[in-house]
Image (cartoon, rainbow, N blue to C red; front, side, top):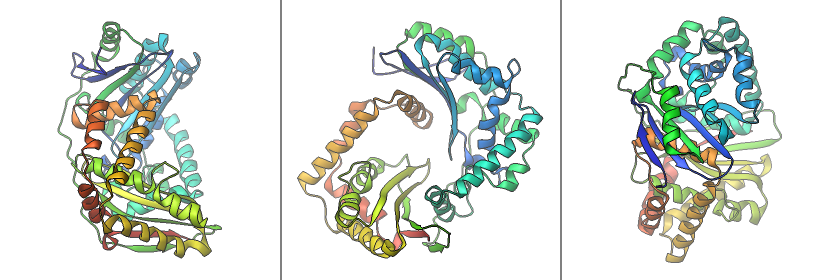
Length: 407
């Protein structure tokens, strides 16, 4: 069998299946709908729906939903992002049909009882308040709110306390009808399954749902002015993000930017930020860089958590590292090592089949295709030092970078 199989059910729902040995299996439905698809008066609605999907269906109470997979040692979960919602499960492979049927029931038959909606408002408001007590997380969302000012991508996924209080059942039903559509979804499976049996189970529990399709319209954000903001908070540690716009997920420069970010401040202990700031000077415990992609834009963010006395010195050192990347192309040995490390990271990530299941589904959802691992490795191998240098100067040009500080 090939690395993965892609097929459609009779109703047009796209499916990707990756065979994998072992007792554990994973499946989920990824919906091309998230925070950026909300109207101004709907902030937090996509996330609220993700919570209330578990509160009852036409044939199950909430406690039946929560116990259906957990009672056999599995897990049922969901998440909401800026551009997608995912409902997924991990389980022993003999419970495949149980997991598929439950996810289908939640996705298409949820009833959103008013009583449960009211209870969940309090839960999410608590989540918002808890989030405000975590500046290392809040600073990322605040930074995006400035970068994507006056655009849905800048809105907090949780919404606001006021917007959550105003959510009603009719708002949920309307959003579901508009966005939870078959042509807007992908079902992803990773596990040790017979392909014929898998198709039968999926067709049985998902193939009969039909929804009217429409072309999703999203407006790309406009480039906002560079900003340098400082917010006063009552914490011992200072938090800072330096960043700006970066290539979109559809950009030909995406792989180059991924390699560049991994080299600068990725997960490796040998990243430039970690070696030349944390290890060399001991100014900070937390320092890294991230690269977030959306369908029509992207974002790079360098995060610093440090003692307030070291903040300015640490910021200066970050800019020093960025200038090095922009000053001259990497040597042959440097770029070879960077590529080798990124390919190794990708290979290790394949061991987490739950994340692989989601990643495969997202790729099919966005591009209607999935690249093999060898294709990905080849693209990384083809990146030149010149391309890396050019993208570094486009993204890490000091004049294009914004700063947000909490201290």
